[in-house]
Length: 449
Image (cartoon, rainbow, N blue to C red):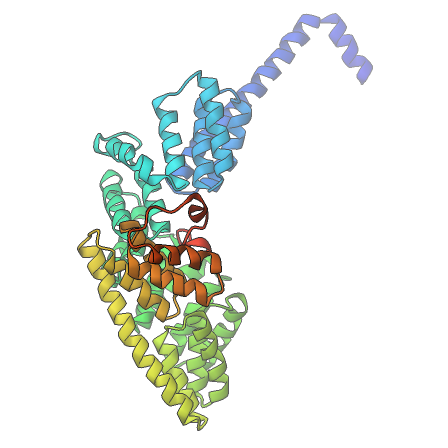
């Protein structure tokens, strides 16, 4: 066989060379055609907010066009949105090198990278000017700024960016999803529900949004409304522990305790810190007269969230069933105190959202109340917000000094004590700057809900 092929090649070399060329051209056409399809898929994924998937598609594009500044620019954007900032910077520098200088598009990506890595104050002005001038990348700019503001719980700024984003892309579900999240943090659940439902109109398969809508309906004791959403999710995510957990809550509210127990106990293994699962198990045990088992689940809820008043009131009942009346009374007193504090925090948060100002007293009081309720991370965040408004605010420095002393962090406590000792303190020294008062208690990144 091999000999026959050699004879054909010797007799008709030109024909064979032409055939080889056709094969090579055909292979190249197929390869680059596939790469083009990957390019369009990457753009589609970025528009849908799926940067990790976009990066997978762009790997083919980088093989096909390794010297394209535009491919590297888009790869930089995908890496940035996927929180891989080192890779983003490398791609953007490569795009700059291949382009032979900065273009407006590459400069914009560098500004967005700076914004997402925490330098918003330096770049927000130029970015928002682009939005005002109807820049074609306005949606990307607003998404990046909103993401940063949400991560840092700058809710007013996040709300403004998200509302503007809706005007730029009225058919995109993500800004409605995120603004619903902001409304929840501002304790405006009615408006949050409206935004979540609008997001589902635009994209019915948003798992996190549909699940959150069901959870909010369960919080309002509307099991039938929640059930319609959960059954929709169950068809596509039958093994999801979150869906099983919420279905368990529905069955409990419907009085179907046996099925509720099966679903909740199946879910709690995968979701050991889901306070709604733990709370419902506690209430189920309490309803069936097993006070000790109820106490176990309810204590686990309060370990996660000491301000959960429903769990605390249920624990009062569990303690009374066991004849531990003094402990029950102490718990009841604590419940009433936390209830008043929580109402005050909610009122102050609404005032901060409705009437923005530069007075540090509001965030300082919110921070103080949250610390007193055991919500340390959020408390530290709001105290830090107060210092951003007034770096010399004495009540805030006193609260932070006392907080860090209680937690054995002498270095951070000393920073705030220095401010208190000085009648008119100047700006912190370099050493002081190195110990950020937020430290490990800075707010979490943008939640998935």
